[in-house]
Amino acid sequence: MMDDTGRELRPLEDPEDDCYSSSSDDTSVEVGEKPKTPRVDAMCVETPRENGFHQSTRICLEYIREAMLHHRWQEAAEYMACYPQMLEDTSFGYTERCKELVWRLSTEILHHHPNSNMDDYNSIYERMKHSGFKHYLKISLEHSFHLLLHGHIVDAKRQLLTTASWRYGKEQAVQHQKAKLIHAYRSLLDYILWCDKKVSNSDPDYQESCDIQEKNNNFRQASVNLKEIVRNPGVWDPFILSYVEMLEFYKDHKEALSVLNDYAYDNNFPPNPNAHVYLYQYLKRHDAPEKKLLKVLKILHVSVPSHELMLEYSSLLLQSEKESDIQKAFRIIVEMLDFACWRSNLDVWNRLKAIIQKLKSQKDWRKVVHAEMAGRKDWWPVLHFTSFHASKDSDENPDLMEVKASLINVLCPDTKLKYGARGVNSGERT
Image (spheres, rainbow, N blue to C red):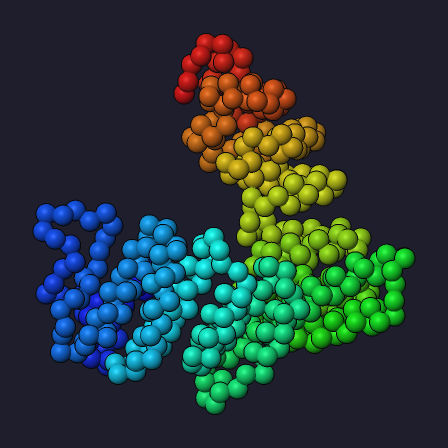
């Protein structure tokens, strides 16, 4: 935001140049005076390409910038009331840049101004939407977000319905991606309205046929667009979840599973660990075979070895009688503990202890542990088993300390560690 303002404060040049020049013959800070914030030249001297009107608007913009930097929102609002005059000037070809600047400055000031209200937001959004076509879709989408944020769901949907019918020659094709988002979020609002009706219809004392019909209409409107949207490669997490929830409600499990499988496995989509999480959660809800669950978690493990679902992955493997699965469970939990976010988690350490107990039934269990820990012997003790960790665990989680202490000789048999009661009592730190 301040970068855009800074660009606007530079002198006007030939409109064929994409950027303003940073040179200036004048300064707004007196010699020897130390400015409180970085200043941009006010351009008080009229140049061949800048008349008095341009000079006034640039000085006004500088005042707006200074007021915003110091959070003087009332002062910024007063100056902002004058600056939109710049939109009426088309002599230098910078109209579109000024429009976006007015839009973003105005909404930022309103967001922080203590006395702003919904009418103020609606006024600026409507004015900027109709000041030109290049930012129409973007401003309309933001307007809908703002209405949605304040609970005006029906008004937000009405805005998107109007925007979805927008047409402006070749500009419509240029903004194809933005138009796609408009349809997507319109469907998301239909889903929200559907959720509201679903909740009200769940009350046995309040079930009217008109509400049920309206709920079903919301589903149809949302599903048509969502089905089309999620076919396009991209990251569509909230839209996928909304669509699947509705399909589940109407017991269309075949379509729901198809959508989730495509989202997770279609190579046209960008890699997205969440896609595998959603598929796993769906399969688990519907009591899918363990083999399918393991397949999904195996792929998730490759992309996010620190994911919390790795606990469930190791639990499923632990139920197996295959030696290779127990060894795999051991590797999975050790890899989780490679990440600092899990090093104080009692559940993970308890799982590691349970796996090691089961692993000890294998003849070559020491070789398995050694092979996995060999590459970690230089840094794992520092991550988990210093006297600092001993002191912290002893104070905050004695159960965790007990579990970790019982595993030291298994995980780091050839390393002298200062983790344990002795290290704590001595007050040593490593």
